[in-house]
Length: 264
Length: 309
Image 1: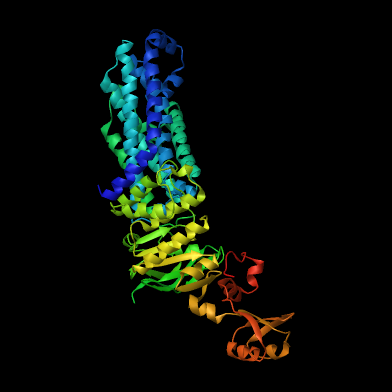
Image 2 (image 1 turned 180 degrees about the vertical axis):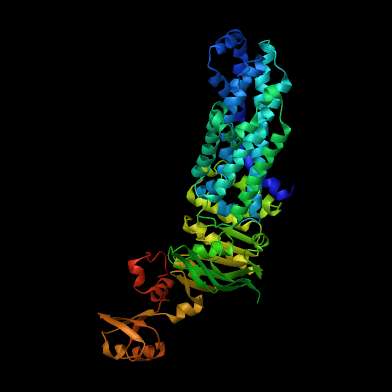
């Protein structure tokens, strides 16, 4: 990596280190809490789920019932909370890029240095990828840490692959925010659009799962390709495709930013 | 002499709004060039277009003979820039920030940055959020100069600085120019331009209306003369001279405005016994008014800050 690109990436990571710690610990503690609660839930849970309507179970991806701690974590954490909350970590970094820097009036000064514009975008993406990896590492470590203590049968590998599967998924929405911030003039608008797409995709997937007539529409949602890695393992094709999509969005962001004036 | 900045009909419009129109500008190596105009006249637009922060609507700009857009990265490697408005990461100290910019520029030796900070009375160890506006501006000045660029572009560099620091900063700029560096700076503070610049470009409503040496601007324009005589004198003979206007007599003191014909006035005055005579140089403020005339009264706020007595 060129020296300049690394310098820029490191600077963003330094700026984000508190965010990384807060997100990693907060998500990790949530995971830890679910694992800790699992023993008191497990007997009553499957019993209770029997009374739930099939549609509801399908919507949460648990029509086959809850199988073990991994299934429980999948339902509560890795298929619900994490994919809805964690993209905001990357979305906020992405939207702080071009539009955010214009708003903070720090872009003119940074671009007074001999930095090509593409490096500003790519360094954001790299910082996002590295920062997110650390958050996911903390999430996996803290979540799994409760298992031996609470005598829950949960393999470290399951938690790791569940966490790892979030990596391209969150990067996609971060890159989308990055693209938006290269096009629109407001950082809030950039994060708003990316967050809107995230929620729309969630709803789309949830509805299409239960309504047979619109079943095919699921394919438009990233949640469809996200799957349930903690239970089923990582679908590597989807993993790589989503990662490539996030890179494609980043390339579009470079393209858009390169062609526009910087506002004051 | 090598042209450091050269523009050809440089034009930038923001949709229907005027930015700059057909700006043709040449700045040579080693010059201190002042870019003078009221707020909103197009100074910042010109600078930001030179630096490729904005793309020209038409026309071209060259710095060091390189295309402002195509070769922007290598141009910026040779330019130190202080934007008119800027913010820095609040948590960083001046030292961390300069270090970061140094790494981006491949400059490891920050000794000159420390020298500059000392001369401008700036503490580089406090985080930005604790710095006053004036001190932030100093950090901006240091980051523009610490890598000893051959071209320094400064947008309203002394805003927020106290007079003593301004003076020291002017001394720094003179040193930079003496070492062969080129300085291009915008200002609406006329006295500053008068003190610093070799040449001045005057921008009005997006157009470069005049480029002249500071010297010729000052000698060219109206001068005000005051002569105190031993006894009251008649005003008419003075008023009759060509190039003389606004003759006024208060007691034994005669004042007049002069565009030409100083010799005649002196000879006429010498027929009486003269006690005192004052011929202050016209400030650029007045020069400014001759270019802007009455139009500034209505719109953009004729900035009359500063100005020599």
